[in-house]
Image (cartoon, rainbow, N blue to C red; front, top):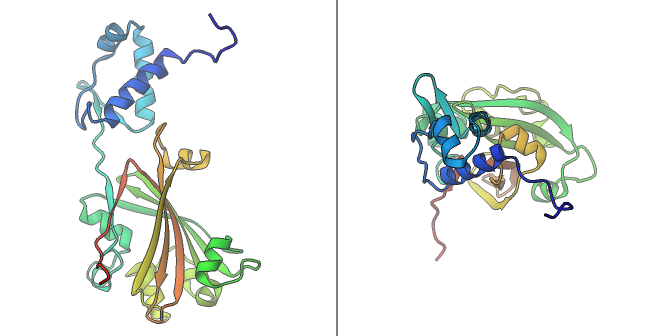
Length: 259
C-alpha cells in the first residue's frame, strides 16, 4: 500500500458523489425516490449511518429533499431561463411593472426574490471602465450588488456598475427600492432608454465565495455574463457582471441575423 498517497475518500462522500453523478446525468430523475438508508447500506456494503451521512451531503447541496414518512426524493429544480430578446423590453416593463428578472421568473411559474446587499461609489474594474467610457482610477461609478433567488434557491449574483455622472442625485445611487418598472424605468426617466444590449458569455469554475453564497454543488461550473446596456444614442450607460449557477440557469436568445 502506498502510505504516502492521499488519504482515501470517506465512504459517505464516495457514495454521495456516485448518487450526485446519477442525478446530474438524469439517471435519478427529478421526483425520483432514492433508495432507503437500509438499501444503500446493503448496496454499497456500508453502515446505515454512513448512508445517512451521504444523503445529508446531498440534502445540504439542495439536490434531494426528505418527506416525512415517504422517503428522500430528487429535488425538482427547473432551470431559470434568461430570455435575452424580450427581458429588457419596454412593453414587458410597462405591462408587469417588474424588473426583468422578476418578470422572467414569474413567467416561468416561480417566485423571485432579489436582495440588494450593497450600494457604493467605487473605482471600477478596468474592463468595466473601458465599456462605460469612465475613469478606472477614480470613484467614477456606483456599484449595486444584487443576489437573485427563485423559490428561495440562490441562482445568480449581479454587480451593476453605473457612471456616477448618471447615478448622482438619483435613487440609483441610494436606494434598493427602484419602484415600478425597476432599474430600467429609472434610467429611462434620466434620458437613457435601453435600445440594445451586448452580452459576453463565458463559463468557469466558481470561486470559494461564489460556491458558498450560491450553494453550488461540487463540480458544477458557473456562467459569467458581462452585460452592457446601450441607449438610443449608442452610449453604454450600465454594465452588469452576472455569475450564474450553471445547473439552475440557462440562456435563451433570439436575435436578428445581419444581412
